[in-house]
Length: 214
Image 1: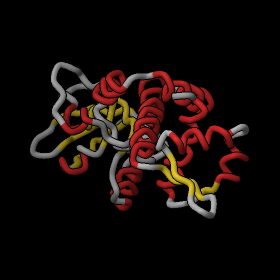
Image 2: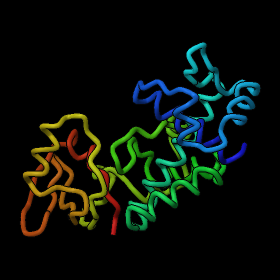
Image 3: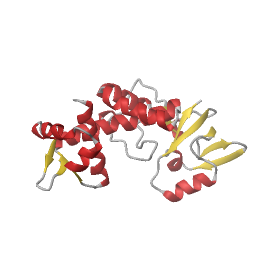
Image 4: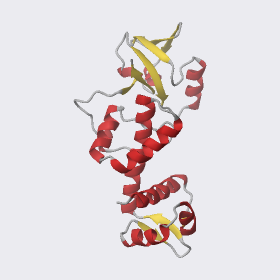
């Protein structure tokens, strides 16, 4: 599928996430030359246009959009967690990645990163088939703190939790993305060292802290 078609489908998918309708005129303004392309996409069964000109994805278009967004957000996660480039490089790289990489490679990267639930901006990464099964034979580059071997050092990459009070508590203890930690014990609670401070946290908290082993 053409890159321009992918960009329109991605735009529509993101608007659906935000529950914001978008019309043909707005799409043409964002994607020059889209008018004929919209007609072609409608004929291919990827989009539908109602009487008011509002454009929506069909089931087929939504499936394709989900794959594009999954690739883009996994690329962002990979670039930030593994390479840590600047924001502009991250976005440019993710945009290129989403058009070129196969589903098999995407799933391999997802497995390598430990099946991250969100991108660096906190937006959900649509899960793939690899997320629904236990992966064997591939060591994850990124792992929850609960998988870090005792005595090993790691860098906190992100914290995945919907509990804002938990995020605030971890931040007050100095557990933030970018901080280096060492796991000293995992039973009966997880004891980690942050700088000169020793912290004890429950397993339910430790499993939400994703790290990269040094």
